[in-house]
Image 1 (cartoon, rainbow, N blue to C red):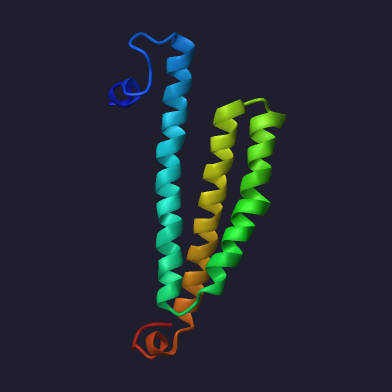
Image 2: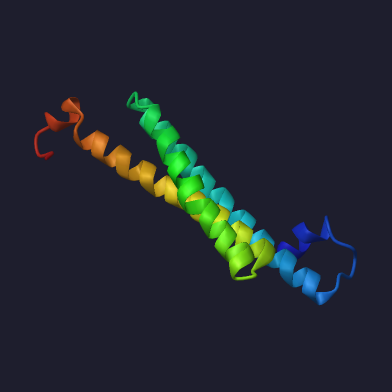
Length: 121
């Protein structure tokens, strides 16, 4: 499957190092899509509870405090170049999703309507 997708963008017989890098970047691109999707779902969950500020705060923290430093460290400090940049993106999106999910879990637990349900603590 990766060969078919990459074949749309690469020449017919690319050099092995180009093909290897393209496979790696495709993997990170796919991972990034899942992590970004999880982040968007978590933002939507919080919006459903009426909380629109936490999404902004978590995004700032996840992108600027976690994602960009990992991007710089991996991309330039560890000389991973393109894959290091994508790794930083994945860390930023993943960290943001985790932060948002934690916030959602806390807010859901403190919602009065749900705390009145028998058997729910």
